[in-house]
Image 1 (tube, helix red, strand yellow):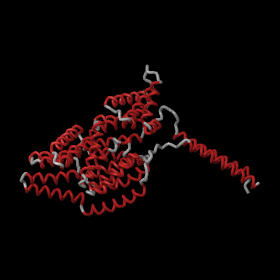
Image 2 (image 1 turned 180 degrees about the vertical axis):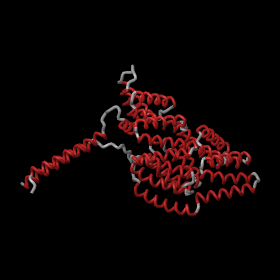
Image 3 (image 1 turned 180 degrees about the horizontal axis):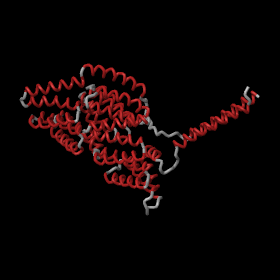
Image 4 (image 1 turned 120 degrees about the vertical axis):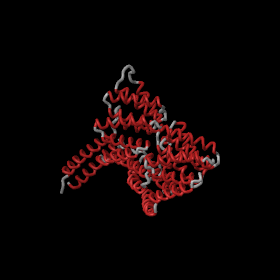
Length: 490
């Protein structure tokens, strides 16, 4: 039999090993109050932006202001991030953040410089300033490659892919996404993989590749859920809803969008939920539920207008134009449509240009202005074909055939209708629809099993400090137990 002393010595060795592991995990997860711990700063801001602003302003005020030091630059970046979280991200503030990023890079704080550039890029993107967003994202990419930060490199490639997609440069977008996904698979960045897979799904959806879109989304969704981050899970349901909407199943699309709203409609997430509001309005409008659609469209428009978020304002304005036209308020429809077209052309976003052009075509037809409608639909069709947006090409072809008929060009209208039928068969043919139905049923069943029923808590990747204390108590209790056994054995 084992002696009490032998058991005690063995347990002591195991205890030391376990304590070492717990301590190392705690050190990595709880870096303490180190100024350079930007992840901890992000957690503080996410928890309570107002309190974070007070805290970081006090920290900045306590530092000497007569020189540019690392401490002062980092404190300034933290304060700016807290202000951004409170929606105080006007162009002047964004310019100040870029200057701080440059100072951090000059002082050797590359990680913080990348953080500030990325934050600025995201804010510029939401405001529709794609040139500045591209510049900031490129700065992050260059710095990440120079410093060997693979995770940051992948994020930058993903961001550049989003910007390329907005410009209608689908080839560049796919290259960026595929390079980002390759890196993220290599380093096992599961949240990053989900993000890029979701973006690939949206590109394929716009190109009419609904099966490939769903394949990407099916791979992404469990990773989003695993992340336990509200905005990411909400985005995943939103993407799935868009696929249903493309399949003209507005009822199921509505269900997915409402699930996205249930998870993501939080005070801190209003900027990110705007697209889902617009998509939900589209699903409701497809079902003829005009009043409900208008509520969502108006909420999205008012918030985006207040915040100066031009891309979202373009989409919401387009919905309000459609609603106004259907109600016979052509003056309001014309006003919203013109506003969306002007904003979209300023942004250079092909998709956002095509959609209001199609809506203005419908408006011109309703007003009996077939010649003016022809100009708009010709431009929309040309842009959709140029940028391989097959779903929009299909929509434009159907409207195009009606415009030609209204102009008395029956033969050309018939040819345009045949082209519409051909594209429809390619995108939504019987085989595709059958396979999509099977996959979507499987996806819906799987999603119902893995989606949390209650509010989702944001994962920070940090280990609570009390884990270490609990581990110590458990080890002490185990040693006392073995000691007692040892005495009985002896």
